[in-house]
Length: 609
Image (cartoon, rainbow, N blue to C red; front, top):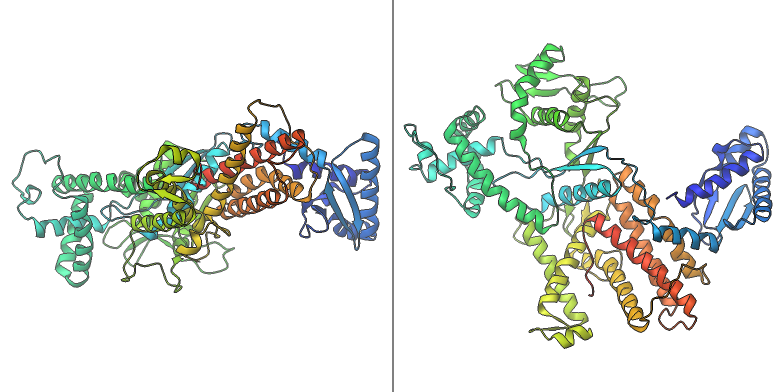
């Protein structure tokens, strides 16, 4: 469905052209002074320089043409269009035009959003967790932002492939192996004379594994011999040593089960559960190819690729693809992964979502990939670098005792905070009472907890996504879980309010009446209609700019517009049945737009709160 701004633009372009001016001056934008107008065109200001006329004269010619055309064609796009000093064109839209446009949206499968993706494949790399370690708050942003980007792309018709890209092949594997040897030296994996099959059951639980790695990591910082043993074990694993490969498979099986559970609790999903180990088969060829092409050179024993360009504003160091001891690095692994992705998927676009401190790493990797011809020069490769989630003290978010908080604990804390707010707002029954629950007088404990999970997830995700990704933000549990203000619970509360109105209307009007959205009769009604018309443009732009915060801002403004309309217009008490039915269609569309947007953001609304 054509965007409303494009429909307005077409009218303006026709007018500028008919008056003898280039169409490029007809650009239309949302007004930054909604008290004066709804849209505005500032093109007369720029055109004045080229045509050597006063801006107000050009604006006057254009508005006069449009006014005349509207009368002759009986067109009702504009209810008001004026030229004002020094040369602005102020526009107000006709209510009939708005009503027709919204009726068209309501009939569309995706409420007017087109599918510009046309099935193009986009790889989204947004996991990055290390195996053998629990997910913690540091993993939240990549997961939440990445899931939203993946969902937006799918909604817009792209073939989105989300890859968790686990850290499963580095030194941490050698550390775990050697710590396991110290704890359980009797295991057959450490018996060099063993010739049989290795056990299918792992020699550790997820809890034990999560203790093994930090212990090993701490030991390696003070015990040089232990660290050397771990480096040797890593080397042997990466070269196919069977006993260590068997341990690695156990680590992966135990870790993946736990990671899938915890990502699932966050309602974050991946199409691929690959890791750095999957890139390993490509690395020998990669190194040789870079050397054969003359792109890799030795520098202090290491192998590097120069990536600096004349247009760079600052000096960029070369990308190291092999250390002096022959070991591969993260850059080597990422390049190997790109080779695999090109071989299997031929993506039209890459999106990587990590901490913004990895910006240089991805500049280097992207440039090597294109310089070597692994990725076409015109294929977009985007790194979304996010800021830090901080506590109220402005420092990275920690537990009360100063440790790194597990993600499951954070989710549990915010669910409990929401549950307490539900208790404040309505009765919760310790035991199910179906009659009371159906009447809406109370919630069962089971429903209250289920609702708290939905609302808690909304609070957590919206609290993150409503901030611009690159910026740090303060995680404020009280504010994020509030049912008022720019929060996830406020958005859900608005949707639930609409659901309640529609349910009450249906119960009072058993006969279905065919209706359509009518032209607005109040200011708040028109404000709601205007917000709804922006939906398709906001959805497309939010994905194109990889900016979920713009979608959050939109639904907050839409929710405010609905609540203003609800406050000023007594929907269920309206005696004019045609007007009431039109309002019901309007708020149904509002519910559907809000519900679609929050699903794309990664959460859903309960039936009541």
